[in-house]
Image (cartoon, rainbow, N blue to C red; front, top):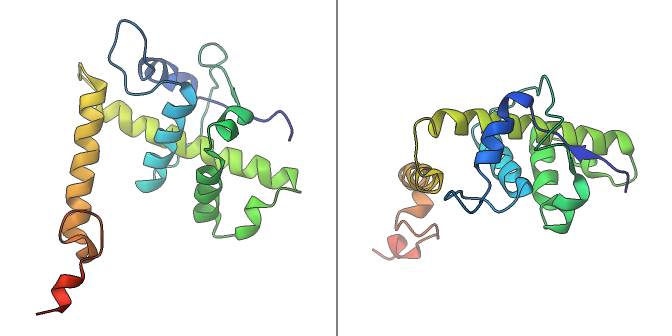
Length: 163
């Protein structure tokens, strides 16, 4: 595979760095790849896709696609690309142009997700707690809007058909 890299917008670089665990903070993610993947999924879920603009050249610099693949994130990246393009061919391993398109889509959704996180985490002391609250609120809304999750467990409940 070529040496493709996932880039981060310069205006989101500080946020990404603050999402990574260090000895002096309680941050929710262990690596930049973890934080970027979460942001991309959040951006895709909320249909927030933003162009990158100026790219961060320093920390975090562009991240090799191999890191995402080694962490098992490649299938998620491909699913995001399929959903965005509605074209299964976008995951073709033989075409470099499709790989570049997948990377671009992923970067834009990650940038959109980082914009969402920037708003949600504004003023928060503990990012982990705030993100958990966001996820919890999201689960509560999906339970209300999705009748298959009436029991709140995320599983289809057959008991409603027995009465």
